[in-house]
Length: 320
Image (tube, rainbow, N blue to C red):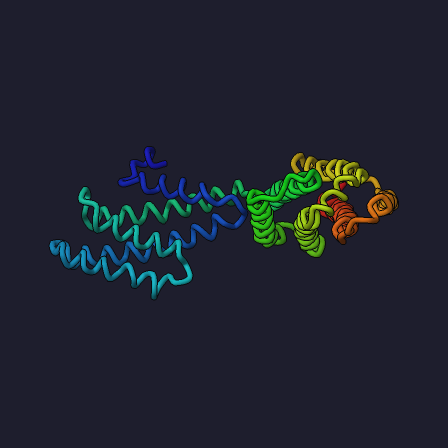
């Protein structure tokens, strides 16, 4: 369009489109970004054009006024809109500071092109919108992959250093992102508005799962004796593989957008209880901490959360 109509200073239109479309993947982010960019452009351009018009030949006064504009935009006009503040300052600096084409006409063209770029981006985002539902599925899958990795490593006794904390942090970041995306998902679809409770429950369940894994990690390494006991609970290893398979099935369905109703599954504590009793009888002369017993119970609770999540995912996305 810029080349076809030979728009002066048209590169600003192109740059605006690239900047607005690039960094915001979630639904609704582009519209919010365009609003702030247009607002900031108008404020910065009008201020710079007025300064240029009345003080075209007074460079030092222009510089002084520009120095006053920057805190004025931040403190007075755009306190709640940081991106609009950035654009307003950038626009004013570009219009007043660029030597080439430093004229009132160039300033107006630059301002108009940035606004036009925002409108072009808005039109594009309406024709080819990024769906919040799709983003939410990917984020669910990512979060479950992180939680399962934490769970497997905890069961295998691999987590007791700083790397564990960084991975827990990634789970929390993913859950926060899910909450933001859910707001847009509800706007997109009546189905998800009706099932908003199940959406919220999915996020809560994943937070519970990560919390249980944190408790499992603490339980496993609370004492040397506890760790020794837990290492001999062989049925826990089998359950870990079973639960990981269930989680991977959920992840696969979310990524491929193909859902099937999960088969019913139950998990009993009988085998672990018998193992604990046998271990206790074999080590009666040693101090037996609470750790192994809580460890078994926490694994059971983790399994219950996995089954609950399967049910919620089926209600939300299996719309056959």
